[in-house]
Every structure is written in structure tokens, then in C-alpha cells.
Image (cartoon, rainbow, N blue to C red; front, side, top):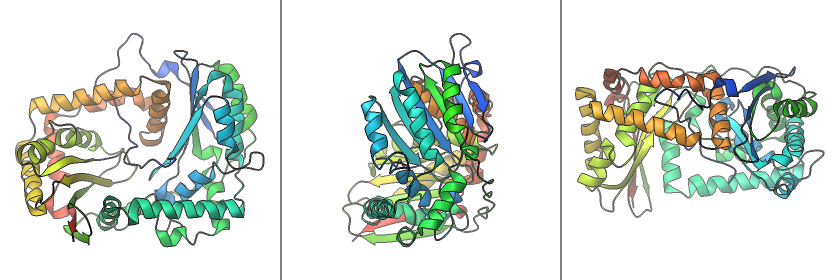
Length: 438
């Protein structure tokens, strides 16, 4: 699948300082800026004879509008469907001929194209990636065919999926004003009515070099790689500056509830709270609270709902990285016959404990340790380095902050965990969505 749900996408950050010796640090990254605005990050890593080649665009569903929802995800698909120089499907065939593979994902805030290939394929991959940034074909027959693919994906992932439909209802109920109100897939009526000229204008505005960051990590010579990038990308024109997203979600003033009656074997349960984006001072404390409540079998809600009360088979959720305020969710998969009212009562008991008593020193340290372990695991590959550099550039004010965010986690006071629980996990501002089997 080319589309990876945004929930999967999240920058996993370090919770302790990087080791002084042999570390991956700012000195390993070369930054360049082309005249057309393309930012290029190069990291030489000869640990394996391969290259990770990631292109990030600052565009996602938050940049869309009613009538054009889902178009970012659609363009993600169309980027594999041909240019004036490379026909539909030819990008994949050439890349596989080099021994490589690729993928892509669209989230609320960004779109990324990810390539992995042997080092000898760099020149051809630079040429192909630059070619599709220069412009894609939007051949009418292919355009309509891909529209059908997206409509089918929505039917499977949302309309014919109990989980997907409940998630959409939760999101659109909890978020009223901001473009996060709709999902990345978009509304079906918009998918079926996109006009080709409008989609092409959207592509030209947002998928331009001045709205992109290219991250290349692997076994290559940086000077030669930069020359390739300049040769193939340098003449692509910049677009006008995209308009900023100025809508802000108003503060929640009342609890909201959604009841979906649908054919199902078991009920589903979702609880959501509006929390700030990555630039907010409370972001890091909320990430640690996410670990304490929801991550792993020793987390508070898993232990209570699954192990002790035996009300559920799984408890997930938390908060993804987002530029603007979005949802902190508690997602419960109840066992057959479980009472949603009891599940809700147990969750509120546990949340109220945190709001009233805070968290233990052991829980706090465990959350820091989990962040640390996940970070090092993510840096264990060239693709992990490329991903984390790009996400730091997109979400945290620049790639250099990847190497300083550790201090932000370590500097979260123990008592701030309780403070953010009181501030954001408020029953008067919660949205509850329940699927009740018919």
C-alpha cells in the first residue's frame, strides 16, 4: 500500500543525551539550498552499500478545503502514474530493475516519497525523482482510473469498516472548524467530483521545490551527489508561497457523544481529547503521558482494562505528531458482551487518578526509557535516519532539533505530567464514540 495512515507516522524522539563517541549528530549532516528553494540534506553512511532517498513535501489534508478534500492523497497516487518522460508504472519498473523498492505516505500535514536502492542506482533515481517533481501527466484516462482506486479505498477503509467509520465520526465530531475535521482519504462526494484543472493547480502550488525537503542517507560521495541534485532539480521552477492554514480549532466547551449502531460482533469504543501540536510547550509532557497510559502491557489502561477487568482485548491510541492541535485518543477493542458504560467508567477512574495523584517516579522513568530505546532502534538503519531527519524538519522547526529534543524530554518536570492530564484530559471537553452491535 502506498498510503500509510497518519497514525502510524510519528517522530520517535530520544529521551537521553546522545553518546559522545560514534554518535549520529549534526556534524554528519550536510545542508544545501538550491536557488529554487529546495532544501537538501546529505548524510554519508557506508555501513551498507545502499541509499535511502526521501522527499518530503509540506502538504497534507490540512491544506485542503471543502470540495477538494482527499486530493493530497490522490496526488500521492498520481505521482506513480507517469510524466511526459516516464509512462505509467515505469517508475516502479525501473526502480525494481535497479534492485530497489519504494513507498509513499500522506498525513494531515505532510506527504513523503521513500526510495531504497543499491548505491549504484543513485544517478538514475535522482533523475526520476526530479522528473516527477517537475510535473506529472494527469492523463485523463489514468486520472479517472486512479479516482476509482481512491473511491474503492475509501469504501474498504471507511464505509465498509466499522473501525474506519467510527474513527471518521469521532474526528468529524471532535474537530469542528480546523481542516483536521476530515480524514486524509477525504469525503466520497469530493472524490467523485474533483475537477482535473483544480487538481493540477493544487499540484503545481504544493509539490514544488520551495515546498520540499530532500534527504539522502547512504553510501555515496556527497560532492558528486550534490552535483547530481543540482543538475536535475536546479531548473525546476519554484511555486508561489502556499497560503498559510489560519483556522484554529475553538476550545471545547461541552462533552460530545456519538453512538453508531451497526452490524458487528463486538462493540467498539473511542475517547478523544483535543491536545496541542508539536510546537507547544506541553507537547513533550503529553507524549510521556501517552506512554504511561497506553504503551505496552504494563501501561495503566491496558493493565486495568485487559489484565484486571478483562473488558478488552487491546487498548491503543495516544497522540500523533501534528502541526496544529489534534486528538489524543483512547481506542478500546472490547471483548464480546462487554458493557461500554463499564469501559468508560474504568477509563475515567484511571484518568482521574492521574489528574488527582500524578504518576509514580517509576512510571515517569519508564516512559523516558521507552522513548530512548525507540529512538536508537529508529536510527539503526539508513532509512530510519532519513525519516527522522525529515520529520524533525517538518514538525520541530528544523532537522538540527533532532539532536536537541532529548533535553526537552529530560527537562519535563515529573509534576508536569499531572498538570497536562488536568489541563487536557477533561471530561467536560471529551468526545466519546461507541459502536453498538445490532
